Every structure is written in C-alpha cells, then in structure tokens.
Image (cartoon, one colour):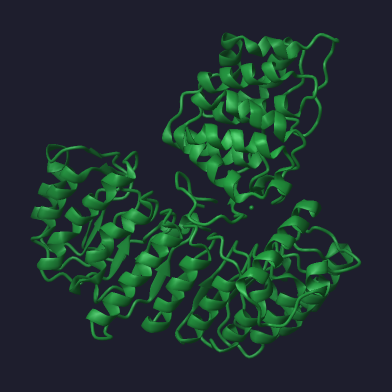
Length: 590
C-alpha cells in the first residue's frame, strides 16, 4: 500500500510524460530533447518525469523551458534523483521551480516521492512552497523521502508560511508523507500546520515511527479538518493514544477510509474505535489488522459495522482471536457480503489474558516520558511474543534516538521455487553442507570435519551465488546460515561473509533488496514473509564481530542503515556485549 502512495494517476490529457526512460541528465545536452518537447508543447498542464535522474545543470535547462508555461499545474517528479547525492538535490529543485515562481503558474499537485533528499531537500523546496505559485496547491506527495523529524518541521513551517502569504486562501486537500521517519517532533509540527490549514481531505502518513505524543497532536489537528475522508496511520505506535484518536474520529462524519493497521491499538483501542464510528454513515474501508486485538475488541467492531451499509472492506487479520474467536466474528458479520472475503491466515491465536500494558493503562493525560516508557514496554512484549514501502526509508540518518518498528520484506512470494534457487540444494549437497534456507536451525554436518571451509574459497562462493536476480537473496541466506551454525569459527564466518560481499555486484535495486533482507535477518525489523514477526537472534556477538570484519565490503547505504538501527536499539534488546556494539558502530561510521 505504501508503494502506491508515491504514484500520481494521469489526471489530464494535457500531460507530457517522460516517465521511466532511464534518462541520465548530467548536462543540458542530455536533456535537450526533453526541453525541446516542453517548449513545443502547446498546453502543458502536467509534466511527468518519474524514473529518470538529473543534476543541477540539467535541472536548470528544464526549469528554463518551464518558464514558458504559466498554465502548468501538476509536477509529477517522483523518483527523479536516483544516484544523486543529497547535496545535489536542493539546488536542482531550486532551478526546476524558480521559473514557475515568476511566470504566474498556479500549481495544483506536487509529487516528489521516492527522492532520497532528506531534510536538506525540504530546504530546496521552501521558497517555492511559500510562493504564490503554490497558493493553489491541493495535493502534496512526499512519500519515502527520508525527511526525518527536522525535515518534517521545515515542511510544516513552509506550509504555514504559504497559508499566511496567501491570506488564508491556501487550501491543501491531500497530504502524503509515508516512510519518512517523522517521529513525534515531525508529527507535532505538521499537526500544527494541519490545524491552521483546515481543508485537508486525505492525510496519509504511515510508517513514520510516531508514538502517542505525535498521534495525539495529529488527532487534535484532524478535528480541525472536517472534510477528512482518508486517515492512514498504518505502522506507527498508537498504543495509549487510541482513546484520544477515537474521540477525533467520532467527530469526522465524512470519513471513508481509516487505516490503523500494525499500530498496536490492542483490544481497548479497538473498542474505542468501535464506539467512535458507531454513527458514521460514509465509512467504506476499515483496516485494523496486526494490532494485538483479542476477540472482545473484534466483536465490538463487528457489532457496530454489521448494520453499516457503507462499509465494503474490514481487515482484522493478524490479531489474536484463535479458531473460536474467528468463528464468533464471522457469525457476527454473517449478513455482510465481505465476510467471505475476510482473511484470518495470520491470526496469532487467543490468549487467556490481555497484555500487562493494557491492565496498567492509566488516564488519558500523561507526559511524553511516560509514554516512551510504555512504548518500549510494548516493544519488549512484542519481542517476547515474536509477534514489520516503501518499509523503512533507506540511506538516511536518524534524527532522534528511538526504536523504529518499520516493515520490510514485502517481496511477492512465489508459488513455485525458482529454478535458480531450487538448484542450490544439489550444489550444497556437493559441498556436504545443509542448504542455507534453514535460518534459525543449526546446520547438519555429514562428517565431523567442518565442510563450511569450502566457502572460504572465493571462487566457490561466486559459483554458488551466480550472477542473476536471485544473487542477493542467496547471499543473505548464506549469511543467515553461517551465523546460526555454532560449529563455524569466527574466522570462518568472517572469511565466508567477506567472500560473499566481494562476489556480489550491486545495482540500485539489488542493494535495496540486500538491505531489506539483511535487516530482517538481523531481527531489526519484522518480516512480512514470515507472518510479520521479528526473528530471534542468538549469536549477535558473533554476527557483530563478523560485520566489523567485513565492513570494508558493505555498501555505504548498508552501513548507514545498520548505524541507525544500532543507535536506536537498546542494549538489552540486542542481547550482546555493549563493547561489541560500540565497536561495530565506530567501525561503520569510519
């Protein structure tokens, strides 16, 4: 769902599309054909440039061509700065937009999703967002941009300034900023902007590491936007803020879509949501999956929605009902057409008692410090129970030391094993070792001799990994298996891991996939492929020592990600010696 947040649908026949041409704009000459097309276009309402990459010189040429089109309204520029340094993006954005500030354009849509520009990228947008060209802005998409809390605050200030400069005419309708690590400070800043604007109809900010203080600030802002039709807070930590969020939802009668999936609202939160939507007449989609909700909470929801004629989709998958609870829920919803489409395949089963956190939930009033403690308690419980795009955003540094429960690993499962993977078993058999697809299980060695030594040979590792689309998957599986095998020495582990990294040829896509799977393998994030559970890791000392040894072969983005997660994960959750963690951190930062 988060990947879709980055996309802009074609909304006008007057659209010039240069999308996904793989254009590498390193000079004005490189984009001359595009600039000529822009200049010759008679009525240019939308310009789609996604799936290309440009630098400042190319952006200057494109911006110059755009000066001739005061009629332009939609800037669909997502995924436009692939391979560019963060420092290259702000001047490029300035060059692209400065002509639109002076030519009298009235922009309706800006889509800069999937551009890894971080907080400094927002700086490059400030002047444009505050200008008269954006007084008419209705849709702002900044999904998966790595803004962080600082970028969120800068963006909020720009939106407030735009509203002020427009003398209250600025009427933003859609705001999309998933996967940006906004956290509490960014959420609170944006909430202030939303309150002032007051015209929002769609707010989608999933996977941002927001906790109750940030959620509560947003809840207050929601009430000031009475035309809200869509609220998406998927994969944040709502926990105790569910009560106040419910009070806000109750006051939003036009609400059509509510997505609170994977947000730890738990049973009490589900009951509060049920009571909040009881009088809603327009609600069409309700997503409450993976929330540690027990049967009592789900039945409360079911009894409220069973007579709600508008509701077309209800997602309760991945909660804690058990077979009997699922039967009760289905029975309660037997009059709804969608009941037969409801899936409970990821149900965690019922428990006799609710979590201690719910028993100890206090009053609605609490300070941020108390809430942070509650959040970490819940995270610890989640780890104990083994109960995670577009997905953490890659290549960014953390702006606040928090533990971020982001999701990765949403690759499409295959119904049959690919040939390239199925062939691995025979190859592993020739080496007399087990297949490296048994993560978490100790390898079975046919003789007392450690046959993993075969993989200390670089050529053997290269032969094993091959050079195809499955190579990174094989590499991570190999790392998983050597780390889970107690028979492998530290030296062997480092040798095999080094050969594995040296044998890989990274592309942008394969590097991203490697990072996603590696973080899942290390237990830092939950794995959609295995029921949204974090993996239990028993040899972190060995793993971290190996990562120290192979640091020189790790991609830069991998080092950045590992540094962020190490900094944000408490020592007691890592279950490794603090000095080893610190050694790895120091090594990664170089």
